Image 1 (cartoon, rainbow, N blue to C red):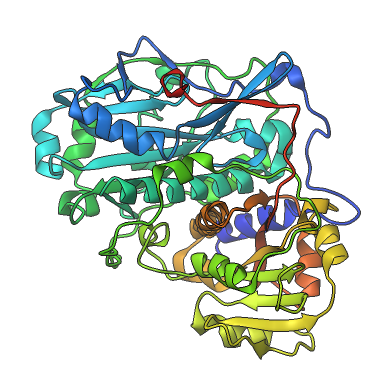
Image 2: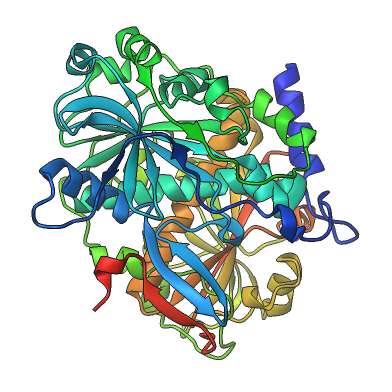
Length: 511
């Protein structure tokens, strides 16, 4: 194996949780160094995205996209403590993902940082209009997503790189849904290398980040009303050069005064940087608009506990699983690769569905691979539900689900919980070590689909990043690295904390 692949394997195995030890972290929360939840760029010109009637059309349109994907969904308060929730979920509500907008706004093309607390854009760079006109049509909007690893590592240590990729996948999904609601299509553009994506957002400008935590380039998403412009798909040099030589503004704020350096995260980040992909097949966009509403995406919450009693119907259960299946609709129309993630289900409380261990296969080509890889005696009984859903073993698996998910009751107290199982080794062989990130992105997209489907069904969901990795594989009979569990998830009826009060995300949304 090439060194980069060795580094991926070393990090993946080294960041696993085991029954007798967790992945390395400092072991406590250092509240004095807790990262600030919002980054700003001092000295940058700001543009409000308040949806007032007299606001410019571009501010209302871009504001609508960002409001319903990366904006604040609510503020929570308990006594003197107050904190925000966002449309896009995040491990520990820490939100390592930052977003930059490249578009022609306010009469000039520019690179803008999105500031979700105030719902405004900060102008980072103004550049030549001719370069933008040559690269994109008037309505196109490019979104760069980045990660601040420290925001997650502060709490989770070396496993934080995984969580940053989960969160980025959720953000991709959230943008895909918001785009479709607004009449756009969202498309991940893999032809841009991560170094060029970083330059697009100004992340390589050392002076602008002199005292601030650096951001890791993530991905480039094109939001368009029609096909993605050829110059964007082909990573035309003219746009990059115009931005690099443009007029830059702003100094990144520091999030913490003290830090712990996690070199293991730095190593895997280096090993998984994408050099860009010269050719890929675009997926056809769905002709129908999303059935989701703006209100639904704003009401999404991560459950903190389930009641441990409520059941759901077989019909709702199957509808929830169908939402996670690949389609030409959001969020999966944004992804350029074929599905690599399958769902191992621990079914607890679904009427007319036997409790037990199930497998939902999201790509039929992996059925034989999974059956051969699972070195255990399973029944492999296919459901008559019209989905590729297979019963592996009958029985009450609540205690097992709880145990595997770091002994968290929430994995046993809902309708069902699940582990997202990735076709791991052959995916890295096919696409290279950079695809390690993409596997987590797909997990995040699947999770976003389940979150919104649960809300639509009158239930609630939550992602579970803490689970005992290899014991999950042992339950499924999986050895080696052919398949790996990357993310857990659970859905049920939430128990609300009545001590908390809630306010809308922004002042203008109050009664």
